[in-house]
Length: 313
Image (tube, rainbow, N blue to C red; front, top):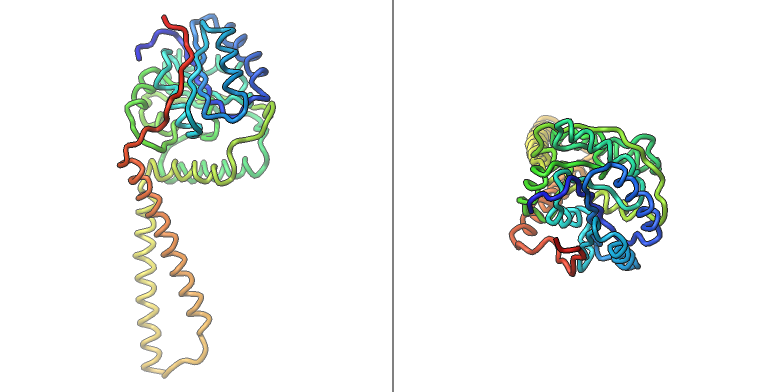
C-alpha cells in the first residue's frame, strides 16, 4: 500500500482492557506534539476482554487518525504486527506495546533517527523495570543470538522500533508463518541504528509472555535465522562418534591384554545416558526445523481479519 502519511504507529493489543485508557491519554498528545501527519493502527489479537470495544470507541473519538484491525483469534504478537504492516500507510512505521512500558513520548527519538537516514531503528531500554530473571534471561539470549546468527541487537526484547517504508514492504513480501520481526528487519536494513529509550513498569494487567512463550520465541529467533544449531550438533555427533570408537578400542585392547574388567558398570551407564541424552536433544532440534518446514508447506494464512475500522479516504 502506497505511503499516504508520514508516520504509522502499529500497536498489537491482547487483553489490555485495564490499561487502554491510560495509553490513549498519553499516546495521542505525544503524537500530536510531533506536528506531522500520523495514523495509529491498533490490532486486536483476539482479546477475550473488552479491549476490542474500547478500541472501537477510540476509533469513534479519533477516526481521522485511528484504525483498528480485529483478528478472529489469538495469533501472537508478531503475526499481529505483520497484520498491521500489511495495512499501515506511513512513510515511517513505529511499533510499540500497549502496556505503556514503552513511553509514547519517546517515539520522537525513533523519528529523529529515521530522519537522519536510518532505515531500521532499534531501542535499548534504560533502567528496565522487569523482574531479575527476565533481565538475566534476556542477556543470555542476546549473547546466544549474536553468536548463532550474527545479528547485532543490544536489546532484542524491546518492541519499540522504527522501520522505513522500504523495510516494511520487504517484510510484507515474506510469507513465513513464524518469524522474529526485529531480526528480519535487521537483515533487510541498509543503515540500522539503536537509540536509548525509557522503560516503565507495566501500567496495568500482566505480561502475556510466559516462560514457555519466551522459550518458543527464542526458538523462532534461532531456528528461523541460522543453521548453526544443526551444524554444531553434526560436529558434536562426529566428535562423540570418534570418542566412542576410541573408548571401544581401549576397552577391547584392555580385555585382550589384561582380561575382563571387574566393575565399571556405572561408568558405562553414565556414558550410555550421556549418548542417549545427546541423541534425544538432536532429534528435538531436528524436529524443530522439520516442524517449521511443515508449517510453511501447508501455506495456511498467518491470520484472519474479522473487520477493519477505518474512515475511507
